[in-house]
Length: 203
Image (cartoon, rainbow, N blue to C red; front, side, top):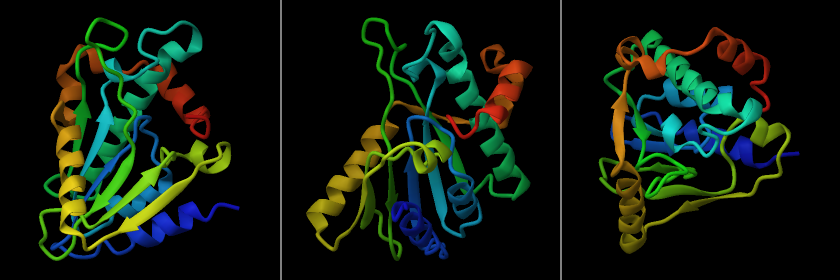
């Protein structure tokens, strides 16, 4: 029995004010549907950080895992479509992280995961979630995860939390649905779409 998911969902249920801002990131972008719904339906503004396919550790790997970066990219597109459907384009941004190309000289992979929440027009977060979960279907059905929610009034700690978010954003650019129309590298194979749907609990 998972005590983590109910705690995360309860935490996200408090995103009911424009004075709050949230940040979410996961290295493998396949948000659990309940978490996705909470974020998209929130009143608060938010930013989601995900890995570029070229920052995914499976980029150009051998075998079936070769298609995983594209499968996660497809999930990014579906998330953007959901944002648009709910008229949240001005409220929620999807940022894509890349620093070089993974498995090449000076190329980094992206495995960050976490949630940060501010309160009452504060710039710095006062709440964060740390641990092993990627907040995916797999994390709550197949994997053994451990997370902790931290709530603080300590100004030094809040500053450190904001620095952590800003550090993650250093190598990001905003991803939009238009990028999928204009960038040939973002054309998603129909077989990948089918496989991503079929194997969604495994991603």
